[in-house]
Length: 373
Image (cartoon, rainbow, N blue to C red; front, side, top):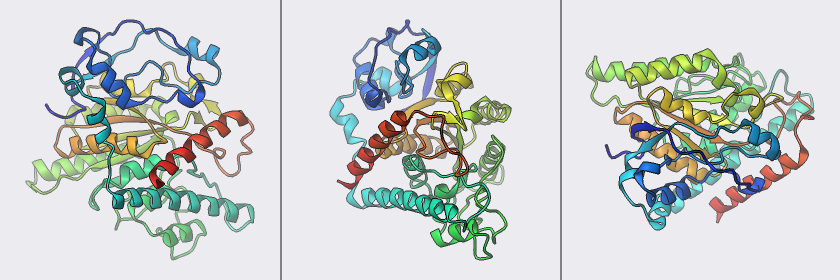
């Protein structure tokens, strides 16, 4: 199997040595890991885009070491195991055309500007209800959704404005929905957390944690049924299910991963791990914070990627979407990112360290500037 996400077997690697990294360099680089692992022997290989020695961004290294497991279960890619990739060939996978780069940059800037305007209107008393902004996570939405076809489906969460924009819903229609106007994408009846557009195959934002994952699984099943049972040969539609790190401890997540893997559904489960579930640190809420490892446990590839670098997200997304479109089944992708504002605009955001937010904000700006250049 030629796909970079083909899980050939599961191994138990040797215990990993603890090393310290600065917060600015703690994100996992799939290219460096893939290249380094290619030169290692297959018996000690623990590389699979998502397998990494240090997944988390640690500002408290002492607490982090108590959470880290000495061993991990990883899926091994055929490409990484059997081919010796050179750094130059790996980097070529990130290359994009000028028009593609402009599209990515414009979509990310649109998302950030839109959310900033939402905050301004909310604090001026022009917008009501719960409003959850996406600031800082734009690379995930852009990196994945801009690779989709019009017929492909997207299922979102309560942080859904930018997903709608990336899928092609007009900004005026999304903003009108936030203001409760009849010209909104849901005629003003959905509000901030329930964006929906039949025309753009945006199947909704869902306010309850994990509520959208079964809907996305059903949409993927529809695509498979139409292709294999109804014999619609051109039906190769893919579904993206977006959700946060807190959702990965809920029952729907595990049930749908099992069903999607069992039936080889054309779906990509995208975890937007912004390290915080409302005010709870991801490290304190999860027995094993490496979410991507739950993919191989169900027989599907698990991938971890820097969710603030749109080029790396796009590279992983391209492989995962292509894999689903070929009928090879689902992929679990953990995008490690960060939100710059509180859980919602009603959240004073007093629980997170200001130095943590400042560090991640600088990183986000560097990633956007790289696309602009």
